Amino acid sequence: MTTSPQRFDAIVVGAGAAGLFCAGVAGQLGLKVLLVDHAAKVAEKIRISGGGRCNFTNRELDPRAPHKHFLGGNPHFCRSALSRYTAEDFIGLVRRHGIAFHEKHKGQLFGDRSSDDFIQMLLAECGAGGVERWQPCAVRAVRTAGDGYEIDTDRGVASAPRVVIATGGLSIPQIGASDFGHRIAAQFGLKLVPPRPALVPLTFEGASWAPYAGLAGLALPVRIATGSKKAAMAFDEDLLFTHRGLSGPAVLQISSYWAPGTPIRIDLAPATDVAAALADAKLRSRKLVANELATLVPERLADAWMQGRPTLQRPVVEAADKALAALAHDIANWELVPAGTEGYRKAEVTAGGVDTRELSSQTMESRQPGLYFIGEVVDVTGWLGGYNFQWAWASAWACAHGM
Ligand code: FDA
Image (tube, rainbow, N blue to C red; front, side, top):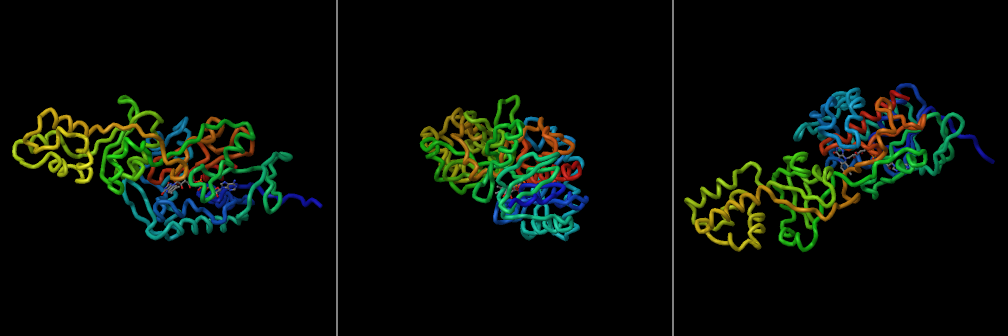
């Protein structure tokens, strides 16, 4: 015996940041919404975000100039959604729910207590919108039916004139990430920008990395850059040495812009004129070059740097001017070619995704009428620092108001 599908006004697939928010807003606008997610726990990425405190937005986001903080085939695509639902709008919602927060660094806002406050807030918004949530519940198929869609799920068939895909990117498959959104886009003939891990640690080859492997755990502020000198992208952030390579905010940021096979450039002492400091030391110091360098960069780094540089293993007063100048130059221009990235296992986000040329920037509806894509599944990738969540909120809001 076949049972007739349960009917809704909209079905949202994916109960993460974008899906929860979209479902709640659409429900409060009067739509009968079904929210479906295959994972056992709701919004696991929000839970682990921001070191457990959720960096939920960024006050420096300028919706008129999205290319400053977002990458993608068309960085201006997100301008409309980001200007209609701003960081201040989301901050207002957070305040209405009585969640205390603070600014940490460069406009980044974090909850004072725990990411769970934000999950509870989004669930309460869904509750206020009468959203029905099926979770855990796998979605086996999406197909057109009549003038809308039907989805086959573990809990039976549901139908609606609109389906919103909010299944996120590929990073951290251990907690529910899947390529569902990409497959649905392909099923309906929508173009994809090839996905790749972004905001991800970079790795280096064993032998070339050997001198630095012992520095694992060391962190220091740097200026990091990639790209041609003319079109370089650069960040002033902290760098972290790991056993396999480099991480920390500086490297996560630059990884989104790094092209395989090309170098990254690091100034290891951006706030110091190393050349002038070494020239000055030569006039007054009897210490070894390594010891003088250790007053300018962390000691462990100075020691590692001196390995394999025998001409500098002597008192600074005996070092040639040229050798000291070359040392200063190398410290400010450390150029290295990563072997690769730590991949989706460690990436905070996925760059690429559903091509924005297939979507309306006003509503997130695709060329396939009634089929919407929001959040990370779209080819819009934000910088580290709350930008990806703000895109999730803004694209969800635009979609909920456009349905
Ligand atoms: P999201 O991944 O949140 O949700 C997708 C949902 O779809 C999941 O619940 C998943 O289970 C579900 N799903 C997937 N496949 C499915 C299928 N086949 N069927 C049914 N459901 C399916 N960003 C930021 O701005 N500030 C921060 O502090 C952080 N911190 C951070 C830390 C770490 C460790 C990571 C990995 C990521 C971040 N991010 C972040 C990025 C941020 O978490 C991310 O960009 C958003 O969660 C994206 O929201 P979405 O709703 O698009 O996807």
